[in-house]
Image 1: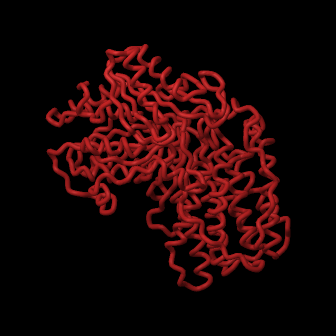
Image 2: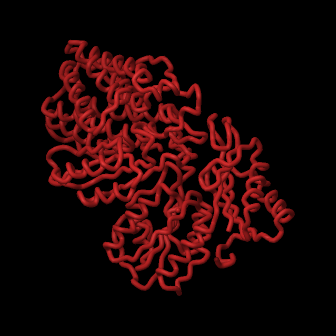
Image 3: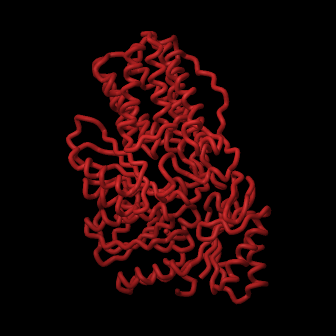
Length: 594
């Protein structure tokens, strides 16, 4: 098996260390220092429960990401607090800290629940902005304001979600009718827990699946963290139902909205207030689960966090462009399985990291624009494994690391385009979730004068096929077409391991089963990894093909390459074989057939 593309025939989390908590006597009021400790405790709690919250919605491979989204949201709030100086007077410090926490959460918010939680923090910050410290009654009033802010942020509020839990927490805090802070926070957390237990009664899909609302569970974690900061004791919680009684009922990997829309689009938008009303109307006509929230008064040009579920990704992004300047664009296709989790174990996220392969990429990331040669030709490739990253880098490409649930941002892709130093650049996203981000980065680069084309590759093997036919001597447009044709002619498949029981198009699978996916759909379910890989190769070649590409992952058995080589030599002697040590996590084998 060879390892050079050029030899082929010519033919797309742990946010920070858990901060130490200093929990002393019961607090009589909530001041700026206590807010900082609450943010730290809330982040630590979400990291601890991240996997549990993610599991409220599962596929055969992990796909639910509410816990991950909340960790990213509160992690961004914590990072903002760490960077915030603490030098002003007492009243200003409390207001400044709360506002900083809310703004950080908004700018880093991910997913529907993340955006709503950022608005709950915004409502709290606005309500407590002018007090040096919050007593029990003052905090209860702030929780009411927070719940109202959460509802105001959602175009079509749904009961049985994090909104219901927030409202119940506020109502319980008010019902406590006391100025004792500890009593109020305990009442709020107790009310939230009771409301969370009722969410299956409010949303039939939760009742059928036997789970509680994921976003509401995350909010309860935050309120429990507040109780721990105020009282010095963590509340005891009975286990909550979190695994579906019937996995067939969990084929909805979304936090809110109907099943009519296939994509979640989210971005930050710099725009004035007058443009946001038009944006809301435009996005409401395109889909559902619409949330548009801003950073609050006082900004010359506010930043808004935009979240919507749509079928037309381009139209949703274009609406943002018409309203202002969108950035940090992310697109998730609900039907796409993701096979890695940003769990509390930071080692899990490190599996997706790709080391820097270009010094110029690092420089461009730090310094922004770099000069480019109008006559030079460059390539940018997304890669989810160290081996394939090295292969693409050896071919002269600038590589952007990433992978499922760890997709690069628009700024990451734009920095890579700049780092090529070329006036003509081809981008290979290698994942349907990254295609819209790549397109947005390409548009930004075109404004700077760079000619950019995006080949909509959905898999690493398609990028290998595309880069194999690249010819810088051709006209740029002709080269782009040739690469697109090569990628399109490459059928792709992948092998992974199921982590949950579920009903797939190939039948019911159990945790630990081997899943063979072709073009993103489960086609085969097996018990033995080697046998399933062999059967997948046979099935793909039965449909025709002259060249097969095998990319071995970190979880591939040591003898898998030798076994597949032997089978191919015996059963398919006229098929050319190309093999690579890809180093990608969670996919022991990637296959391409041309």
